Length: 185
Image 1: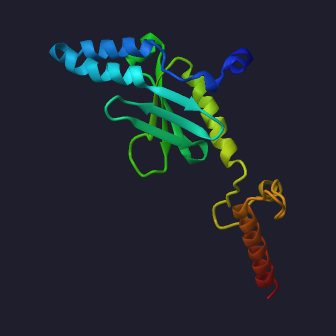
Image 2: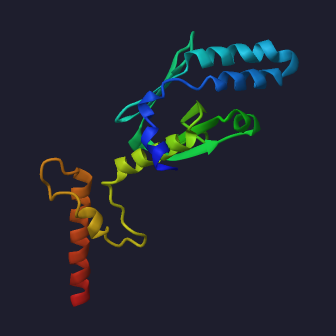
Image 3: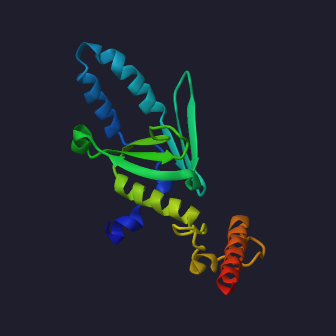
């Protein structure tokens, strides 16, 4: 991604899918043959009512006329992000960004359809996802204490210190004392 593209991408401006998504829906409906009208109506209403909102805490997606559906995901809950493009989507320059959480389902929690700059959106979501978890330290495999460099970034119980990290620090210190006591005996 070039510096110019990175500077011009603003996630807050994404509120609706690109109009090319309606062309995609039209082409998909045409491929159903005689079922065209049954296929295009729900897709048309979904396109017309589909709204996105990106704020500092997460992503919101809503759509529907009779049965309004809304999904809100915080960046902290995001587990994985997938970018998909089928043949028609590539031809129209579109992509679908699928966001997965640890909700237990096999499919994505949210599919952001009709994105022209999906690569930049995926990179933004990865950045926000990692930023939300940047303060969490994980112990390496084998039960070794957590990395001191990760824990050192959080103040020792001062205002704003994350309780989980304080607890991890205490566990690390207790394990270190226990290991030192075993090696002395």
